[in-house]
Length: 193
Image (cartoon, rainbow, N blue to C red; front, side):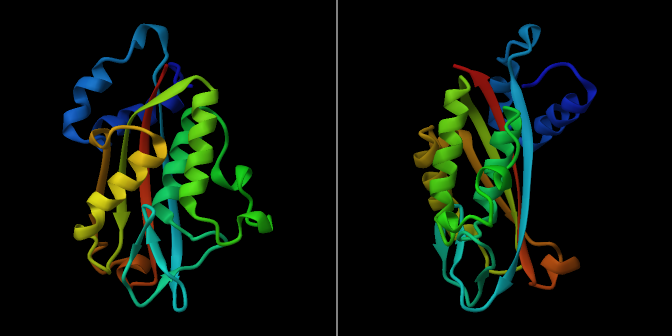
C-alpha cells in the first residue's frame, strides 16, 4: 500500500508521467493525507519464436511468430498483473502462477488477470487507472489497441476510459529492435473501495 516511504514515492512520481493526460484529475482526487492511494509498475519480456500464436492484451495478433512461455506468454497482461499485485503488496505473477505448475500450461493470461483482479478486490481496492506500453519492432499494433483496451476493461470490470494502451518500437536497438522479443510496461493506480 502506498505510504510516504521514499522507495514507494519513486513509483508514484513515475506514475504522474506514465498515466495518460486525462487521469491527472483522478490522481489529484486521491486522499493523500490518509495514505490510501497505491501505485506500482510492472514489466515483462518474452522471446519471439515460431510455432506460437502472438497474444497481446488478450487479443490474437496475426504474425509469423509468437511469444515463448509457459502460459500464452502475453507480456502486456503479465506486466499488468505485476503492477496490480505490487500495488497491494502481494508479490508478483510468478509467485501466484508458477511456471512449474502444469495447471497454468498454455492458460490464457486473461484468466490470470481475472484472478489477480479478484485478489485486488478481496484486499479492498478498486482500480482507478491502468496505463500500458508495448515495445515491439514488429508487428504494427495500432489497429489492435482498441481491442486490447476492451479486453482488459472487460476482464477487470472497469470502464474502458481508464485503460490506456501505447505501442512503440525500440528504434532497432537491442533484442527488441532486432525482433527477438516483445516487452511491456504497465502502471496501475488503486484506491480503497
